[in-house]
Length: 308
Length: 308
Image 1 (tube, rainbow over the protein chains, first blue to last red):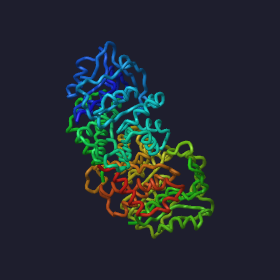
Image 2: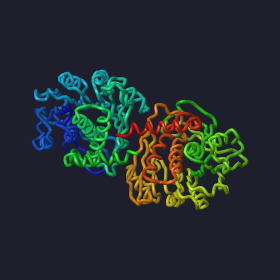
Image 3: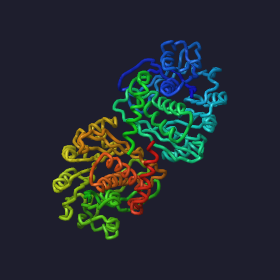
Image 4: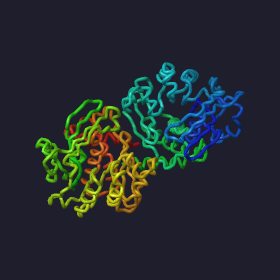
């Protein structure tokens, strides 16, 4: 089943211990779409400027991604400049030039309206709600957010959370949202805000899923699930790792057509795999040159190193 | 098969967000022995002062632990005073009164000499080496250490590491020992120092085992293994969690009589379980009132939340 992802399509200027790159293709929707494209058909809603050329679009279309919903407007694309030189686990933002993204008003193409799997990447929760309303056929809705929306737009965000089937966030976002420092209490606090299921990413320490009685149609509370991370000897560029995780995770779920505990668990493993691949090169380079066979090989490896 | 553990038997004065306790029974050997006692016979070598009363010894002997090797000398027992009020994940040492432990010279009782499983808890590496030399029948030797020995007694410690079958340490100790910040490179760096296998504890994020071609008698490099932690809603007192992990881990291995990859993996899970139990009450309280049935129940739970 197809996924519609709405979010940023951007350029990133990056500095990491492995080197520097100027204006490489990035953005949450880009990383998500590429990762999900190994599992299912992906449709993107976003906005770009004149600097988004055919060669950039080709990165997406060559993976079969439907870019009909990427609106081209005069001006420059969203451009983020960040550094991981001090700490590979924490991006230091040097500049955020929203450019055309500042006035982003998602427009859903007619051909996208039948999409059943919707992913609301990290954008203004008001826009997330609006997209959700325009997609009444979406049977499963997942989303992401970030510290800015949690602290400065909390009420709007809470409205989104109540509509979500699955919220996919980082450890620090879960703590911030819930006001709890203990990870289990933080997870319960976030679930109490409305999402039926919660996935928390713990960077190199893997991820965890926390379930509610509404997570699955069987009405049983499956408690939780822990997925390890693929150990990485070299992290070249962490940008987009979380979005790639979300893409692999949600792409697998959409490919299965039905959300069962088993599908959810496997999806967590696929999320880990895509996240681990994405950090091995700058920008989207690594995802562009991976294959489903390589992904499945890593999936098996992850299983091998975590199962008794 | 019996285990001999050599290490501290002490009193701890503790402050955590859950409260304060004065002079509760503690020490690495104590926590280790209690945790291991659910799997196999445990023999302890340590030293205590006049303040170590029959009631304290009974905590060990009531679990069938052989305390013949706990030497009683005039003076006071090792007394550690610490606080976790600022951060439950990092002990703040307020006072370290070594007392009789300062002159600790491990004496192995005749009746211990046939022990095949030796655990060298965190003590001066010179003493660890000496104990190892006195135990020629030990067919498997594991041990722990801490930042102080890594930085100030490195050469002595390196001598110990070359003799170890399994080194069990924390994440920060692995980084310190290897000089690497990346966890996988840190692990490889530590293995290069000599231990055949390495277990790294990542606190609430579980643990990982890193293997070498010498880890198992089959001569095959089993790469690694990741074990999750049991998620904890309330951590009352983290003191001794690592020693309880080591006790559960090594106790299970000794109970199996043979170190295979499967035994090693299950032992990691049992380590997690004992570590998770130990933090639920002050000092040794929680381990004193657990049962093998409860331990096995948690083992199954850990499997359930981590296996596809």
